[in-house]
Image 1 (cartoon, rainbow, N blue to C red):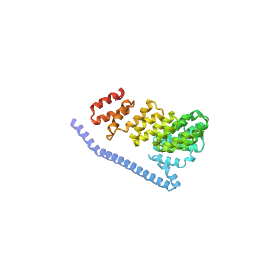
Image 2: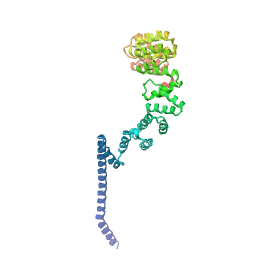
Image 3: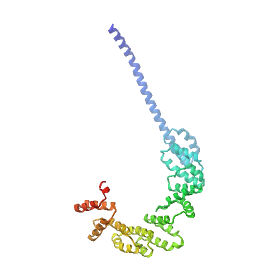
Image 4: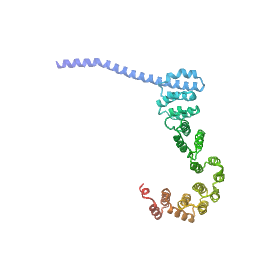
Length: 357
């Protein structure tokens, strides 16, 4: 009886095998077909995308409008949307730009679109609309200047002046869009004269001679003597000693002299080194200010081509210095020379926190 049941089971299994294999084969074919269908679909989308770009380049906008809706599921579709928005940015409503930026937060071009549209709203002089579109400070300098000008235009003067000051204090030339903001700031009487001088110093430090000249030329008539001296110094830092002797000693003139002195040291460290006593006397420098000049030259005397006198002067200057980075540079120099005794000397000069790095 047992054998009879086994025989029936075997028969059933044998009969089922062809069906199972047909089912497996059908499944494989179905999966393969689906994969090929997806591949064909993706290839078709690529081709349509290329056709749309070509039509766009040829200004065949009727073709673009007809084909774009069929690509909404294509991964690169947002780039087409971006192009559609930016090609006609001057006529775009804020809501369209906002929706696009929110829908595509990781799309690289979308990250700059907000600043571009801020500038567009500024062109329209839609100051309230600008602040509604961008409640927070935008990313680019040009857009920030328009943003703070919008603050001023809508009566938020304190925020506008703080923004103007932050944008002002740089040695770089700022975009033309900033001129309006700086003009109303200056006209309000809220621009600190020290901020004006500080920007001249920053421009001098950045080597932006053109900006130094422009800023100095805008100084009031009673400052024309110092303005002329600044312009001369910016055009030729080697005139630093003349500048120091012919201008009254102030914090500003000392700072300008230090910036020019650094430029001289880059060109001729020995000339700068010998100049220090005269600068100290002419600008009445204190010990801290004098040491700043020594540090500048010491950085330039780290090579193997220095004379014994220069090396002795350099080490004496570094021994007095409070600059951790300069002392660390001298430690590395001692290591490179295999100077064990010197290494111990300079390590002892390092602050504890620097030793623990």
